[in-house]
Image 1: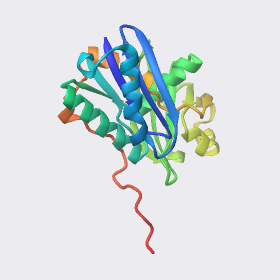
Image 2: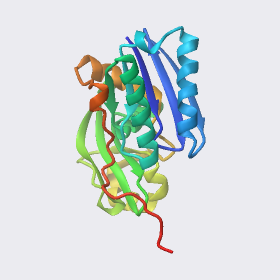
Image 3: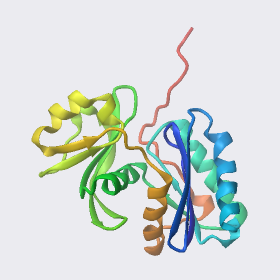
Length: 226
């Protein structure tokens, strides 16, 4: 399996290459520069592995939800690369990637992923790890106020920037359901690559023409009136 993954939905830009069981990743933190960073990172990883885009089985990307501009960058770049190389694409939820990162870093199996959506709202979803790099969605991903987040019965580990932006509201709302948290976790290309490998095997790839972002929020930020 040879798969290239991109993630640009936060201030962290990351690219990962999964090639025959080996995972290589490049990560840079630079807000508002993802469009300039991501393609050189792709070229570097492929060159180091001695691979071309045409030799890949598929590409993958963090399809959102997340920052509008960042999600749009990943979508446009992966669509262009896949179209030119005639490769399929595996879209992966950025919330699922956060949950996978929580499992990787902390060994937890039930994760409430929550990302700061600005405007006093969060993107969130609950996942259960059923096997290595395979997660089951327990609550559909959604956008709401922090005070409306509700975990399923049982104990859940909180992960993502939502717990940094709205810690007190989430802790009060979740109460005893919250079994620890890591507010520093962000979607990462390495987790997207591993998740995408299983999704690809299950037939969840799409053509380049069918690649779409997921924003959850219909409205986007607009300039303030003068």
